[in-house]
Length: 76
Image (cartoon, rainbow, N blue to C red; front, side):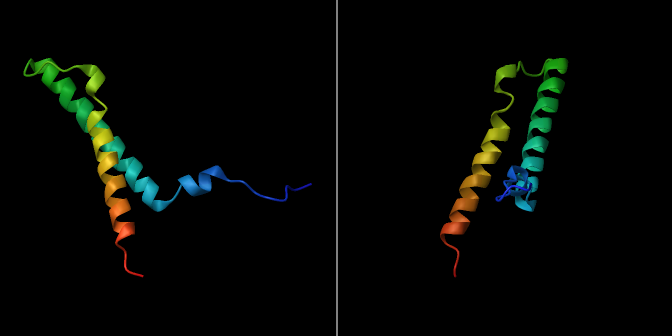
């Protein structure tokens, strides 16, 4: 017997816009980790490894605020 309502959580998550956001965050996190690793190895900077994910979170906030502003002032 098939269920009356189909609940697909990944259908809403797996959109094109969300894929772009996730790729941007992963790229930013990768760049932060690689920069921290290289500067730690060369002795150029001492990195607190707890702060590595902050640039990725900042990028996510910028994307969310930009999308909210774009949707608010969109002409119908």
